[in-house]
Length: 471
Image (cartoon, rainbow, N blue to C red; front, top):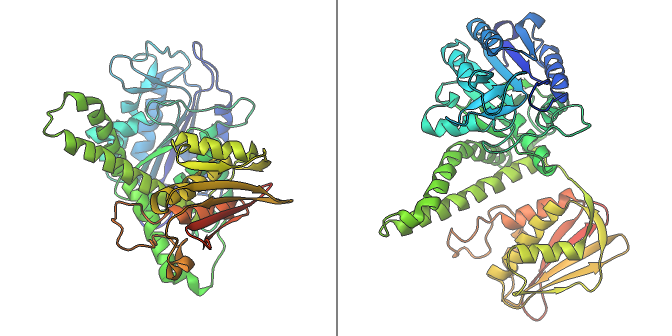
């Protein structure tokens, strides 16, 4: 599997449940299915023949869905896709995911909805080289959770699962919007592509683009699970592709960035299972043998640290791919700094010098990331006291973070914002990843600003964040 899917040997099943007798209607689902049909049959994506794209709209019986999936699974030899949008329901007795139909009832799912296992079984026996399930419904991440127990689709070679929400989370159909939140981002990405990416998009690149946009908009974060690296092979042409002729394309830095992007995405799959196990262990720590208690706490701590590192690497890949987005709103900078200190219990250790409110328009989540890295760096590697000052200017504002430590070595100053750089090479590996200041700088650039580092005349370092009034 190295080339794009062959439309003649591929099949797509699009199921949309928008009307319900006992559940809330989801009118956006109809638009979801129509838009995806148009995309897959478009020459710009696949040029799939219309009779190779089966549409099942508001089915009344579970059998209508299973028959469509079985037929497509038997016919596909290249790529097989199943998409469902509607309500996701959980069987109260077994905890299994069901896909709701018109007459489905939340407390009686077993005979009125489609069990996910009915989708999984035809996929197991299909000859398709690539098998993809896309679920836009509540609790859809539940099918990913089952994989850690060896029960899910990801145990089948050549499969990829893309879910709209975590296993215990709700999906979103924003009132007044044409599409649901998840499918709206998918349609947008299929139409616009990913700037800075290669000529063909992979499923992983599509997922990361959607995840970045949805997370920035504070909407439910999608989930994915890959098997045998299906997510790294070409899936569709990239509408945003711009040929590059510069020498940097094959530079060591470019190769390293591609490696970091691929590595961090591959790490997410085993980390999902590890995190689920550590959450169970944490709940049981009070009942475990005291002899193994320290080991369990170490596993929990290190798994969280690894999760943070992978998330940081994923954020860097979004900056590199040009998919990082801003979600701006009017905020008071002084309030944002105070909230950052309170959330991390730093207020007692940091002096805030911001005598007046300052209203600006920026992305508050990204400002918090910058502040957390700069202030955390001052507290950990500088010296007390640490002072944070907010300084207004006519068209911009400054936030200065000062510490009273020994300062930054002169030879390290030019490299302080480089990725993985640590001013003190003797620091243990566990003391940070060397990415915090790089992340702060990338977020500042995204909002039209920058971070500068210098040593104060008397003692200590000073980091200055400069941002415009309107990001």
